[in-house]
Image 1 (cartoon, rainbow over the protein chains, first blue to last red):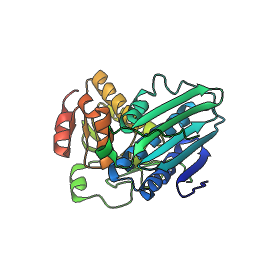
Image 2 (cartoon, rainbow over the protein chains, first blue to last red):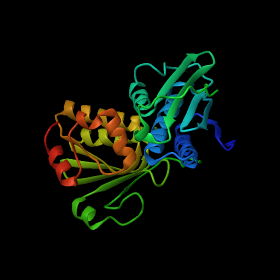
Image 3 (spheres, chains in turn blue, green):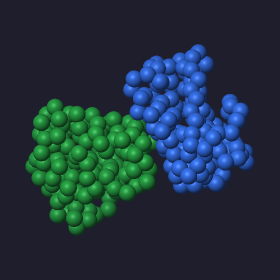
Length: 146
Length: 156
């Protein structure tokens, strides 16, 4: 399920609750391999889980669909993209998703949400490899992960 | 990852892991219900140290795969007019869906005039989600079983 290059991670799974644990493990391993400290790994795992859980809950109806997780290491940062191809059955940024999004916003150095739209929703988040030590430092100009 | 069929079993005084209960657990538990949820290392164990109190213990990782079962386990105890302690001190991971389940349980206890408390421990990830959400400020909480039981004796 994974196509992992040296500085990139690409995973596509069916959007269902049972896949959340392995997605957490995959992104934690990627962050660890690229030098993320304990604090940063925890932040990435918690935030990616919430982003993926939002896809599981909101992106598709009963027929389900794919969940895409991409990550790449850029200098002192890891960028993550969680996306789907769904037409949301509920607004993933609306009521009920508030706590998950608050967690993501509280843990990532930068968050950008594109959609929901006809081609699904994309959530991009950037994390410092040095976790809390580097929080509030100025983000470099990173091109979007797509 | 293959998800095992959800199983629910009731065992007297035994934890879901199959390991024998500790001396402390044996001393406290008149009855224990184990709900093995999804994976064998993600379990919900319900102890009833007295007729009026239940402890819902979460072991391992808990997320959308188990949050509905946590909600149901808490609701069942409240329906039986028991105050509830939710113990996450043995949980290695919880997410927003679990926080919602606990918050719903707390609200249910308040509506029913029953006690409710959260027992938490030292897991980094669990502590982090509490910090980032300010969750501990929203309900009675303690780091020891004794304190949590005391809090759950009285209506929230």
